[in-house]
Length: 81
Image (cartoon, rainbow, N blue to C red; front, side):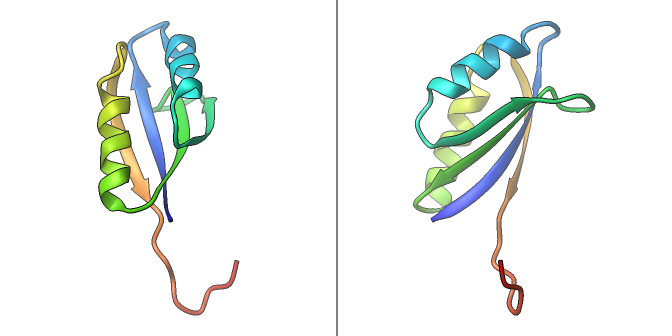
């Protein structure tokens, strides 16, 4: 299982619509609005990197999404959870 965080910039005043649409999507584990450079933060999960790519492309195609940045989790040797 691969996890990633997607940071999302929305058109002005539309973050609530974007949050609502994300909560309806499959493979979205967490969604919340934020202050700062990005309006919405979401955690996604898929079986592999290609699945992460499909989800991110779907997010980017949502109305009112201007830009995204994706941070993919990587395993780090010697670090326990």
